[in-house]
Amino acid sequence: MRVLYFAWLRERIGLPREDVETGAATVADLVEELKAREERYAVAFADVSAVRVALDQELSSFDAPLAGVREVAFFPPMTGG
Image (cartoon, rainbow, N blue to C red):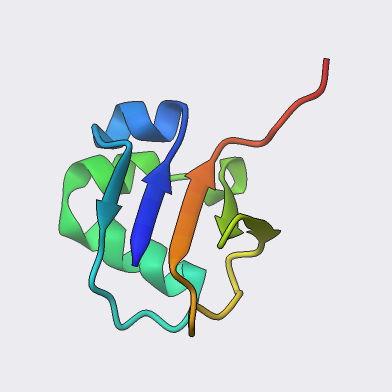
């Protein structure tokens, strides 16, 4: 599965994207797997209330299932202006 990181998440993790092998059932499970990998992921995902997620380019939630998903994108909340 391709995982994309945007804005300050990209800066903290140090990657714009990566391919991840996962057994995670939900987005929240994937985040926990990532946090357990290295400190940089734990720092980036320390406050998930400040993170939004899209599955295959559609806004989603952290309890959404990952079955059949090809792309997960993490980004900060969007603001208008």
